[in-house]
Length: 211
Image (tube, rainbow, N blue to C red; front, side, top):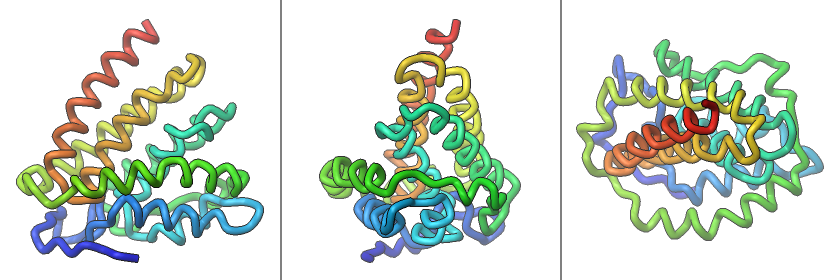
């Protein structure tokens, strides 16, 4: 796996928060998702193991991508993914160094062929996006930005519960979570700023769909 060093990345209390100390490319994330889909079933535990136990940003990205993919349309899938996103983001808020998951959630699995099919579809797009990602606007990567992102992810993921009743309703909050986590994972403050804008739009659209 190729990883891009970023000596300017900031984290609270001198520890990792929502991102890795090394920025991961989106293609790296896709490759790790493929590794987790080996065999008949891809479990949450497999994904956590291949993505990295200290990788809050990439974990948010993966769960957001899955929610955005056709897998997210499977009945009940968005509810599980929403719970995983809330769990990861809440631990960022509380300053944990390593994400913790209850065993019941880590045992949840999906058909590995569906995961691999989704990865195959999105990887060409992720590779193109990688070309535009680079460390910039680093002032947005410093605290309290990771905590703001975590709070937004919690709110957006919580909206996935009522929006699960609306056809493709989870797409808007899932997209916002993906863009926010891409900014964190790639250490790109410009993308993070775009994520804030998209989050505001997603919140407005969600309010419209619900009320």
